[in-house]
Image (cartoon, rainbow, N blue to C red; front, side):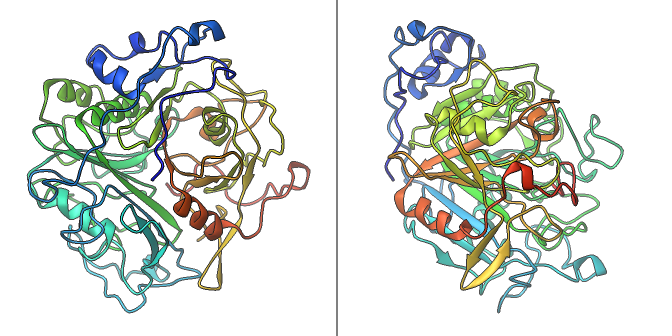
Length: 469
């Protein structure tokens, strides 16, 4: 991995200076300085020159992983610094190949009519082997032989602290502020995942794009009315393509990630041990207690983690198109994205012009293209929000000298102008930007099929809203 640094171009619109003092008081100043953690302020370019951010602290190691530290696992007892999984959709890659479904984390194998079409075949890469690997013979999430199952097993069957968040819990657990169908819409964050840590604050984060999973972090506090394993949840969340990304975190990284989760208004409940088991360092506990609330922030939380991965947290009140925002924070590089692309569709952009729905604290975005199909093993698969299509949120850079692989919470749904609070513009979410030549190249190959047409040729019929999760 070729890590990013905290150094930013001075030609960009400033957003770094004076930012450290805007970090929540419970985050030590040292943490903010080590990671270049910032919240954006409306400042001049001269202000930017006053703050020289240091390089990141030493990256966490794999020492004690599986013993004293929860870590991403490529498989049982195979710790890695990061991994990426792309679960293929059921239409193009049905069922599990030669694998057999099971429910190791709760629930029963679903055989109802809802599951007449499901898919748990996958493609993956890890820090140990960053080239794409074929997992299509397995059944994702149902054993400790795959990254998702092995990593979740580290949390579920060990005695660690954890936070689970998911804007579509389907009433299990019940979140008081969610809507009548048990899910949380705008302005709650459109975000899903789990983070776990030990008494020293060392651990890992796993970003997911699946609704209603995971929703219990320990067999001591199981889901009461639903399953907690992929393929074992009553609502079929394994029809669409999905993505999963896990990353090793130091204590300081954990503090920044939690600050970003609060900024993005993620859906969780610190009072419910099914989804939150709080503990560890006092500052970490305070950050966890701040979760599960609608943030009034209108500024990014952003920084470079000790692994070199760049972390961006968009608040719901920053009403801008999400992936244009990501491009702007990467010095305006061009992006190719694959998300749940459905009405209201944000059209592809072909130049470096800021849209009308923008924020003056951000830089200028580059072009953002939208992939509508991909290919794996000579088989095409849908990357839109059409029924059974794609619900992953991934992207890669297509310009500049940094080979970015990007994993996000938000879809390209909303608008470039007009009602700037539309859909994902008006919701929070987080993004992880990994610099890795092989991974970026492989993801680009995976999603480089057909591309979205120009705005004037868009089809505005079909699915609407935020999709199935």
